[in-house]
Image 1: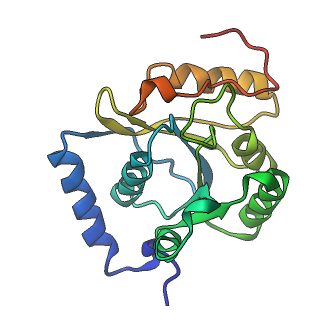
Image 2: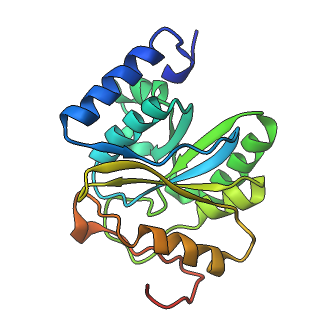
Image 3: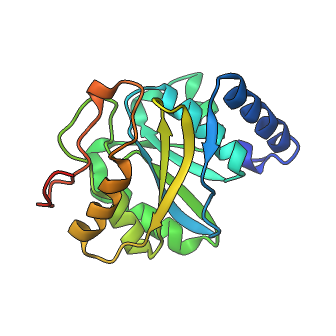
Length: 204
């Protein structure tokens, strides 16, 4: 039995078609292209609404990506839990961040294909800093970071450039911050800062 919708061959083409219709009928456009890679981390930003999950899943169907998406464990109650897991969501306990990073790195090393979606702010609420888990997962696993986005101002969703973690988190975050400067979430006043706590780079 398929574990996720992405492994259900007969349904995938139908869902891709439906996702395209939803985007077009809503006046949204697709921008960029998915990385031509077997393994990578996608950061999904900015994250200000539950609608972000909906549009992100639609993008996964449209681009044909078998994603796994980290979500707060509180959402995995019945009957939502089984549905979210089928859509590729993974419950995350925020109090066990170190364990999540280690387990994610191990999973990347054990699999030939894996695409993990991580909302770097970790919450829909406004916070000063992004969490660094996405960076440490990508760097530890030796995989690139694809800059995914849902821009509500322009009504565009898709991919920006790909960043390969060098170990210099300050320098790498500078490039990432530049890209997200002009991306607007559904609720702009709830957008989190794109710095991480360990960096000292000036505002963009």
